[in-house]
Image (cartoon, rainbow, N blue to C red):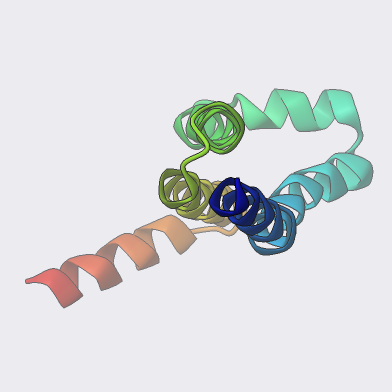
Length: 113
């Protein structure tokens, strides 16, 4: 009984304070651009051919993060999806800066080879 209570307290502490702050940042960063451009214009730009892959990946990562945290109760898997979400949101944001994706891609290629 005590071990089960400790697990629940640990899960709540990690979920609300650890992952919660990162998750809120990701969700509000998307909402802030919606506020600046308007919801309809933001929606159209999200599914432009240059951003559709990053947009779909962000949405899939959000759903998988919630599934891993709430249904599976696996904090490691939830953290992995939060990292994927952050990377996809960064890739999406880079699409608004001219040649930024090319610069990042070339930099990563030069680091790998």
